[in-house]
Image 1 (tube, rainbow, N blue to C red):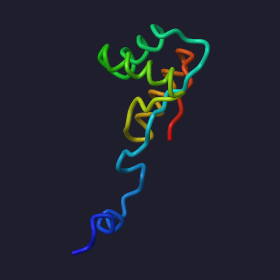
Image 2 (image 1 turned 90 degrees about the vertical axis):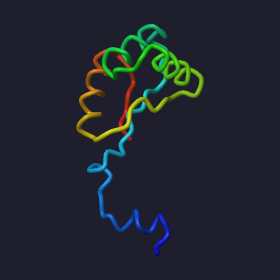
Image 3 (image 1 turned 30 degrees about the horizontal axis):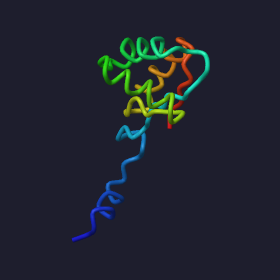
Amino acid sequence: MAPYDKRKENLGSSKESIGNHLLILHNDDINSFDDVIDALIEHCNHDTLQAEQCATLTHYRGYCEIKKGSFNELSDLQKQLTGKSLNVTID
C-alpha cells in the first residue's frame, strides 16, 4: 500500500478543482476593528466571535486566513471585501 502522500499525489486533482485556495485578510492602518468585523459578518457569513477573532489575529499577526474554497468563490468575496477597503488576497 502506498503512503498517504503518494495516494494524494496520484489523484491528479488540481489545486483549483479541489478548492484549496485561501482568502487572506491583511492588516492595514485604515479600517477599525468594527469595520472589519462587520464586513466579515456580512460577506463571509462569519458569526460575531469568529469575525472578532479574525480581526484580532489580523491586527497582531499581520494577516489571517478568513476563508478556504475555490478560486471563483473567493474571487467574488475578494471583490466585495476590497469594496469595503479591506486588503484581501487569494493564495
